[in-house]
Image (cartoon, rainbow, N blue to C red; front, side, top):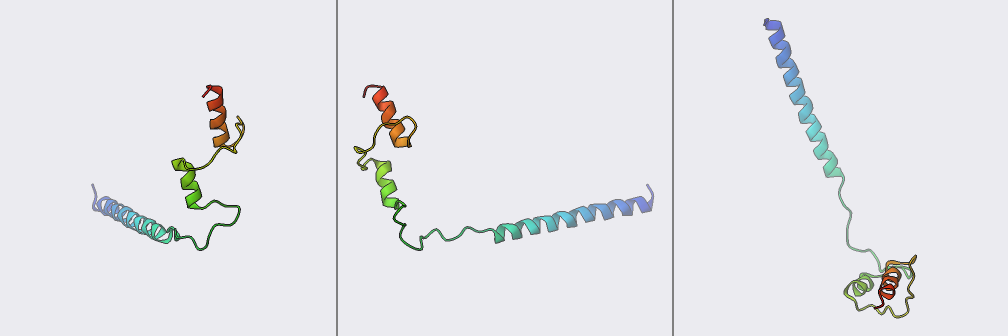
Length: 89
């Protein structure tokens, strides 16, 4: 190999390393810029929204679902009641 080819290969290798370095540096900057916001609520939920306590009561089973009718095309609670009735429970 000639000295010119060796220098060209070294230059290409160095250029790739420099490019990779700046690419990683840019990636780290993007990750630094993209941060999650605050998870603390700024106010109480609106009247049409449910609080976390309401959701928790549904999850743990303290929610009174006696007023919910069984419906195969309704909410998940209505669908579960429809399945339960279909099984004869």
